[in-house]
Image 1 (cartoon, rainbow, N blue to C red):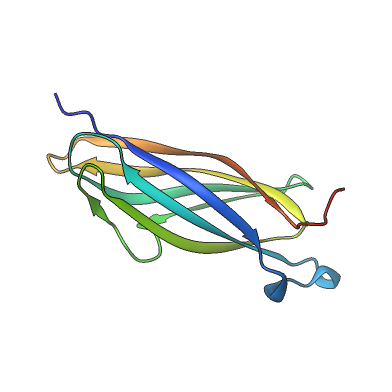
Image 2 (image 1 turned 135 degrees about the vertical axis):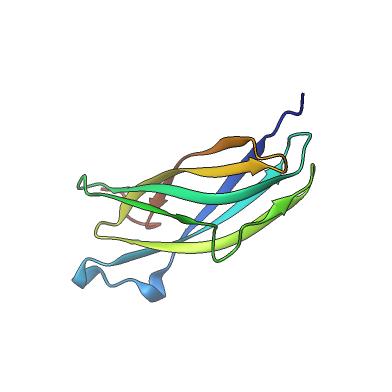
Length: 124
């Protein structure tokens, strides 16, 4: 029986040039690397993000694909993309799920563990 599995790593970064603390706008990029660590061809179909700032405001984002793509990955292949989000506070957190499907239409989820979004000098 095939074992589908994608594994994700995340590299977040603060985007000072797109942020304005006086207006409560803090922008962050995040680069996601998705690797097919399973033993079957599979496709990333959609995503669900939960974005929370330190004030407790939560936003959920759902949609098809990632940055306009629905990559099909063979075992060992990877797909990397960069996207961004804005918070109203200098720190927050994102977590999510990628909805995936094997080439024989077996659905599976790939969790993206929570990662911190933090302005480098924002300690409080």
